[in-house]
Amino acid sequence: MTALDPAAFARLLAGYCLDVQAGQQVAVRSTTLAEPLLLALQDEILARGAWPLLRPSFPAAEERWWARAGDEHLDGFPSADLAEVEATDASLRIDAPANVRALADVDPARITRAARARVPVREAASQRRWCLTLWPTPALAQQAGLPTAAFGSLVERALFLDRPDPVAAWRELHETQARLIERLAPVREIRIVAPGTDVTLNVEGRTWVNSDGKRNMPSGEVFTGPHETSANGRVAFTIPTGPSGVDVAGVELEFRDGLVVEARAERGQAYLDEAIATDEGAARLGELGIGTNFGIAGRTGMILLDEKIGGTVHLALGRSYPETGGTNVSALHWDLICDLRHGGRIEADGAVLQRDGVFA
Image (tube, rainbow, N blue to C red):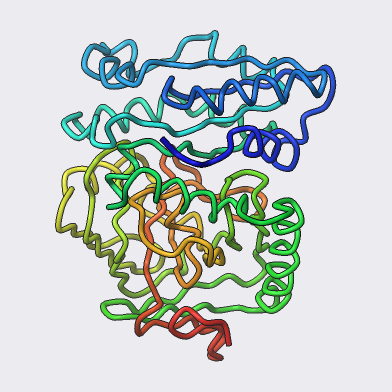
């Protein structure tokens, strides 16, 4: 069990994140392990005069789907999925797994095929209000190396739900990040240096986005889309990020004129290779993000949390976010995280922007 208050969490999600208004239709997806939050969201959305469309699934359903899906399932999608996305005003996905390694034995090629096929659904969803969050489960706590209650407290702090006015706290972070963006807006070149890492990126003319909890909750980052042919150097990603429950760690990439020319992983080499081969855009960067959420104290094994840790940067292989000015197109978007809190720095046009996780 977790001490996280589902009613307070639901108010934050329906109000601050999604701004649910009367008459709107809101799709909410998770496993049945998130039942307390799902029910609280139903109450909150109804109280706002809107329509909650709860879509709970059994914890083992995704694992069974991958085990039994045929070619027609991997290379297509049900039209009802797209129809619902187009008919709803907002969507919320809540990660609440029973087993974070449930898909570890799934052939990476199958995962990439399904990702390519579902691009129309993802693109349609991106045109509407959406948010991604999590509900603490024993599996997530175990992955983070914490008791379930302690992990729940970590998530509570990351969400700012431990503060008297969480919405005010998120607005304060927005202002802090806005000032950081003012510093970054005129910058042409970003250089990231850390043990095993020395890479430069051109961000001239690109837009920095203030990620303040509207789409990811928790959030706490500023991000942009680097020029697609600009990345040069090597990066050692020191915080493991295993999408789809795949165990991937110790990833090292070398870039030349924006393209990945060498890719190694201590664990998960097959997934890394398949991901980069997803399509033409998967071997280029679509995002550079700088984490600013100092309420997340340590690694958890969840990309949603770890990429926001204050004192980290992340680079995403694949799809750019159009609002940044990035033009990279891919079915892949995989955030890889580098911890700069112990011997790392970010330089902006040669001046130190951050050293050892502390902004200059």
